[in-house]
Length: 177
Image (cartoon, rainbow, N blue to C red; front, side, top):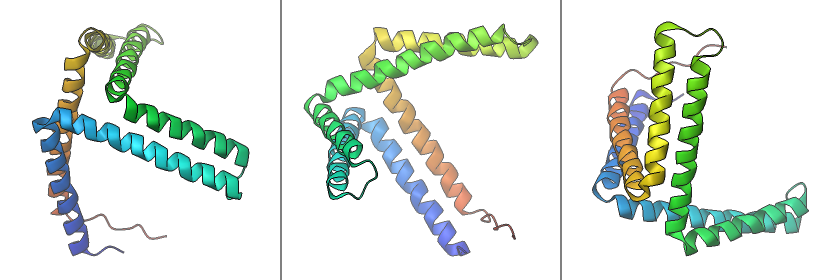
């Protein structure tokens, strides 16, 4: 069981770290994006190498598949590190396509299945916003990336504040079996 003091300290510490990270995203979005891309690339290479080694020494079921997956992970990591701008653009385009597709699905869903009234209006509105955001990201990719980084920064700051507040509240008690 976690003590009250440990819960409070952990909540405050993680909250402060989230606020600092969010502040960095807001103050230096380009540097933040570059750091994330480098971390993803390095992680993919290290993960891939460990997967290849596990496949070779037989520590992974389906050794051949582990080796193949590891090689692909290493290749992906190298591509991410070699072309960071293309990587960030590809991720933005995936998010843009997802926003458009989910927006269309929301609008279709608003008129299917007997939905009516206020719920229909909200679904259509949500769908139109999703489609608009997706189109905006496709047309203005640089400002789209910047916008995403700002949203993540704001999210982290708000989440950090809530985490700190949660630290001062009573931690949940474990339920008896």
